[in-house]
Length: 454
Image (cartoon, helix red, strand yellow):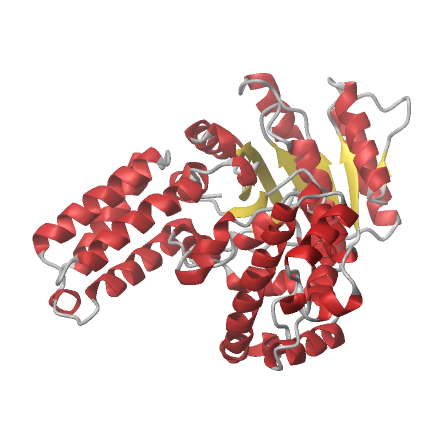
């Protein structure tokens, strides 16, 4: 997500840092590079123009140009303007005064509506709601079957309808009645899609809107389609009045143009993003965190939230103690790697880290599931003494460990190098977590977390 744009902006900022002082000339040059980077990331040209003009107006002020660290102030200004374009703050879901609240899920065929409906239901359940699903796509039987499978796999209630209920309106009306009777507070309605917007589709959606009076009409778009997704969202909003957007396949979109454009073009917020195929690869969209990642500053807040959800507090207190006392062993490293799957891929976690200093070097440390299994096998092939003191692992021991794990001495060397890097990173972050805890108010206690998942 945003990888290409982030890398290009990092190069611009590096050049700015190389200047002895900022002038109108080198500021213009830097902003031209920022403009090109945004356009190449498929950001809507109107959004780019607005951002550059706003940054230029603020950055050319005397206070910034004469500052001792002008480039840092410019980055801060760009960060603030990005947040404004992305939406300023997280846009939360709305709920009706009298349940069930109806969420209408709309979009073109193939955008990921059905999968997103299931993911949203799972997210709602996790956050204390009692959702019910229904598919009213009577044109594509596979769509209703797909939602039924998703509901079964995630233990979510779904209204299947009766043989007599062959119309969209009948299905929707009965589903709402059943949701109310069963005490469900949210009804998610997965609607039919088309390959393109047509009158029949819009007429049907208007009927559902009139019947159900939904509090949310969420447009689902494929982030990989870039500005086509933005145009479709805008057209749906003009005809139907959407209340928010869900962007799917954000994990595969290295440019991020749709995410940066959609609110400005449609006037409606980006509420959720799909970041993978798994049912829990679904996140609320936070403009400030997205802006931070675009600028290479990482997303420590999201990382900490994931860590709090996935790891036991007592376990992390003990891990923090070991880090402070320099007792973090290969055995601890193995146990944390085993727990890493709770947080997602190591690649996705590392992308939350700032792209500066030692953290930048760790961006290349991206083992897949097979690599994690191999690392665990290597550590398991060590003696308890070796796991507790890696300094005694000499050449002969490395050869024995390689044979025992079915790998090579090179792989053993790689593991020990990664372990050393992880120790340094965790030591650094553990010292900063207390500061983060103070800054984050109610999320205090983060200083006890250490860096779980590695």
